Length: 176
Image (cartoon, rainbow, N blue to C red; front, side, top):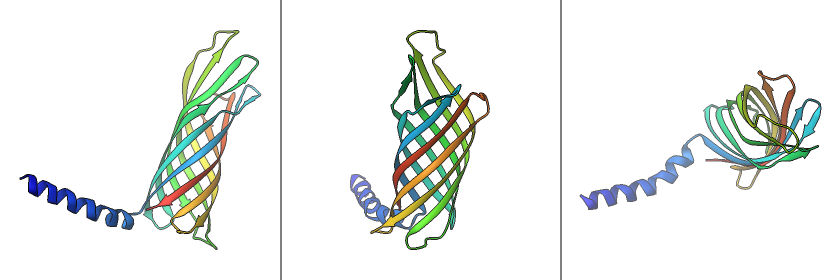
């Protein structure tokens, strides 16, 4: 019985890289500089984002993203950070021209905002939801499965008209 399990595990270990190399998945890691405007005051916290996508058809993929905050920003005693964001959307990507591709990502967002104030009572953690749109460029490198990305994204928050979040990101993307 143990021999069969060992053979099955060894077979899976040998076959898995081949299956994944033919699979239409991609993954990425990005550094994100958020631009968060709250009541006409700009804050610029930052985060790291991971992305995982699956190509439904050529040029159209389903993508999930999660960001984890790494720094906050402060103005007149109010400290704001974005501890987490979640995005789910469709990625529309152009064919490559000299290794460069353009893409648009449309979907939904959940953005967690955390604030603290030394001088006044602040409500603390809030999560905002709404639409999400991003536009970006990718440049492929050797091997062609690895790309550098530059992107601008906007979160369209429904609940609060005084908050206008957007972000710039620089990252890498690998296609399996």
